Length: 84
Image (cartoon, rainbow, N blue to C red; front, side, top):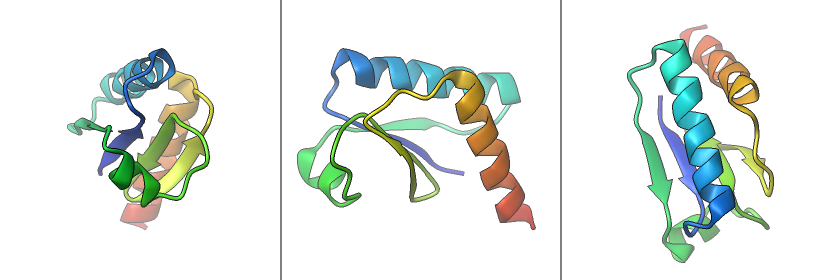
């Protein structure tokens, strides 16, 4: 599983990164949270606002900060799709 945070490093992006890292820890996943800060790379995901949350190449949230609980749900759904 690959988790990416799209953003240039603003406070909102840092909060989303912390929430994603918390969700990964809570679920005991062996996954890195990668920060994508290069504007050209962010633009490839076609989001209109940062921060963005991408799981396995799919944009799950943009322009808002999901809570750790919401991110955990997204991770569990993605894991279920990958295993099913």
